Image (tube, rainbow, N blue to C red; front, side, top):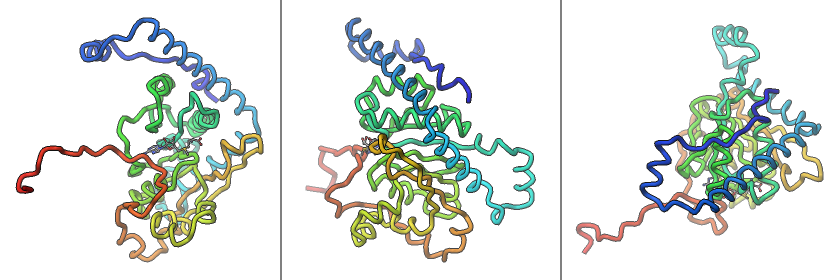
Length: 303
Ligand SMILES: C[S@@+](CC[C@H](N)C(=O)[O-])C[C@H]1O[C@@H](n2cnc3c(N)ncnc32)[C@H](O)[C@@H]1O
C-alpha cells in the first residue's frame, strides 16, 4: 500500500482565490480561523487513526478482495470483449483498476458521526487498493460542513459543489460508494445509467438491493423505485462481511455489478420506457433535492 493515506496535509486555497474571497466577505476573527484550523487538524488525525485501525482488520482484507474481484470480472468479461480488447488486457494486466473513477454520495457528517468517519476511512483504503487517484474521487453530501469540505480537499479528493441528486452518468468504469443512503439516490443513479452500455460501467458499494426489496412493500418499490425493483434481478451482489461491533457502519452492504452478458440477454423494451423518477407519492423521501429558483416576478401573460 502506498503512503498516500498516511501523508495527508490540509492544503489551503491559492493566493488568488483567497483575495477574491476577502473582497466579498467579512474576514472572520483570527481566533475563529485558528480554532477552525485546529478542528481540521484534529479531524485529519482521527481519520488517520481510523484508517490504521481498519487496515489491520480481517474485514478490510475481505472487502478489498471482493472489490478487486468484482471490478476485474465486470471490466473484462470474455463474452463481451473482442480479441483486441483481450490482447490489450494482457498488455495492461494488473492495471485494470487504474481506469476506475469513484463517486461518493451520502457519506454523512464525518466530524460528528463515527459511522461516517469509519466509512470515509474505508473509502480511502478502497481508493488505494483500486489504485484510484484521490482527485478521481468526487464526493457530495449536503450535510458536509465547510471544515469537512476542507478536510476532504486536503486529502486530495474532489468535493462537488452541485447537488446531482445521484444522477451521474458513468462514461468510464466508475465505483459508486453510497453507504446507507436513501433509496432515491440509488434509484436516480440507476435511472441515469439505464442502458446495458452504462450499467456495465457501474459498480456500487452500498445497501444490497435484495435487502431493500425484502424491507419494502413490493407495490411501493415498483411504483416509487422502479429502477431498484428491476435492477435486483439483473445485478450481481457480493455481500460484504460486517463484524457485530461495526454493525451500524457496514451492515447490509454489498458490491453490486451489472454483468454485460445478463444485460445483453434482456429484451430491448427493458431499456426503452425509462422515465425520470418523480417521487410524487413518497411521504418519506430520503434525499435532499437540489434547490430550484422560484421566480417571484409575474410571468408574462399570467394576469
Ligand atoms: C442515512 S444518511 C447516511 C449517512 C452515513 N453514510 C451513515 O451511514 O451514517 C443519508 C445521507 O445522505 C445524504 N444525502 C441526502 N440527499 C443527498 C444528495 N442529494 N446527494 C448526496 N447525499 C445526500 C444525507 O445528507 C445523509 O448524510
